[in-house]
Image (cartoon, rainbow, N blue to C red; front, side, top):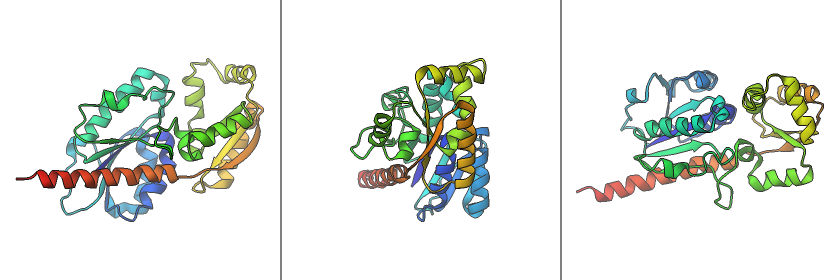
Length: 264
């Protein structure tokens, strides 16, 4: 079976950990893209014999001798700067992967409800679509909720202190794109002014255990010093992302069984 994976580059560290740690995965094919360069480089150093990189989805052909392989592409985080661009990017790239897959896993949350009805918009996709969910089956709000343990865990922290800014390693790597460019601010001073007026005072590190702690803490301290936040830490988890992968596998297996029964 082939699982298609479309994911935002802000989750590259988490994806690297999950992909390389999957004992069932026999082969990984990534479609080359600038946002995916770091993830592909990490995979090359860990699973070079099971990795191939292609220029286009059209170049991919499933290996019938394998029981489980992954076909993936990373999209740039900058798509969040424009609602229509994000929707169009997920739909067009997702459908391309779906054309070669038994199931498509979207590594995205609701992203401010931009992707709220993404399944409806992708009704032409030739395979089932799986999206990250909370434990109760509801859709995950965003990438922070994915690694924090769900929307409920996110709300617990917001209720504890409303002026909380959450950070993950991927978020810290791309914060200028997400803040300065996405908010269309002319400079960082304007971002500081916005944070001050909206009452943000706490920066919360979400630790999943896969990051280099010293580097993560140093980058968080640097960011927090710039915006005059105090730093606190909270334990995160990759369980919801693992659950999404397992769900995608189960859906793919069930689809294969149904197709087999329908064969003449």
